[in-house]
Image 1: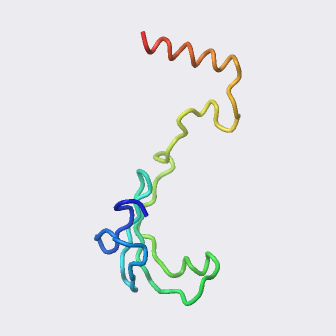
Image 2: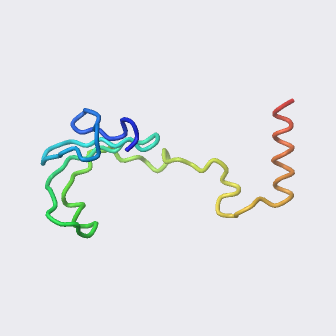
Amino acid sequence: MQAGAVRVNGSVAQKRATLVVVGDVLTFAMGDDVRVIQIEGIGTRRGPAPEAQTLYTDLSLPVPRSEKKQPENPAFEGKGRPSKRDRRVLDLSRARHLE
């Protein structure tokens, strides 16, 4: 648990074993995104994900597709290493930036 990454009813969760009850609102900070959920029930066992999803309500605003993060360099996404030609272009653009 990172510092202040999880809040229970608006207060920072001081320890991982913080007790939560039905009706509590949990806030998770995940990078630039914030997710807010309300607890609807407490599970009696560790079960499958669809069963766990019935135990909370997501109060977060849905993020439109246009606002979702774009990869930093889409030219190389999924292609592995850049080719020699691509590296030359990158080096040239970096050299121009430093001038």
